[in-house]
Length: 144
Image (cartoon, rainbow, N blue to C red; front, side, top):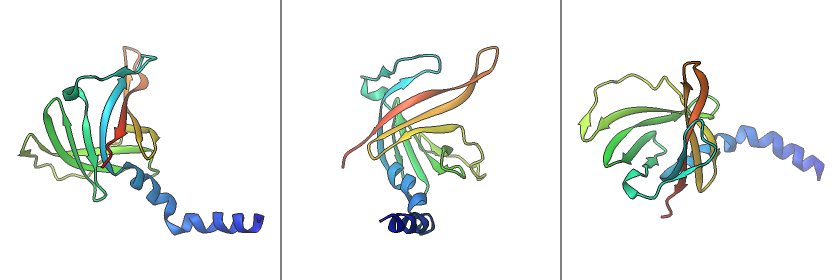
């Protein structure tokens, strides 16, 4: 039994299953249900539909977002170890943006990613002391 476990563990990393796992989990439509500002201890639940961010991650790297009736299209990608996300806006409210540069900044840290839950934090430095932290956003996956 132990021999099969060792063989399985040796085969899995080379099969690409680990690399596919996060992309399989993140792709789809997400609806925000809450947020927690950096210094807060409790999640603030969103009740007004317009204030809930709705976003979709596509396998081809395309991304769409709608929040407060503002629509944005763009590109998304993981950083090298798939612990952070990078975004680049390509269109805002129907207006195409002409910046063709690559995604360079990865300031959205993935806190939790499961089949139905996404929690990510927007990293930043807060206050006069410039203390590192993040504002956390909570999402559930839209069922199809």
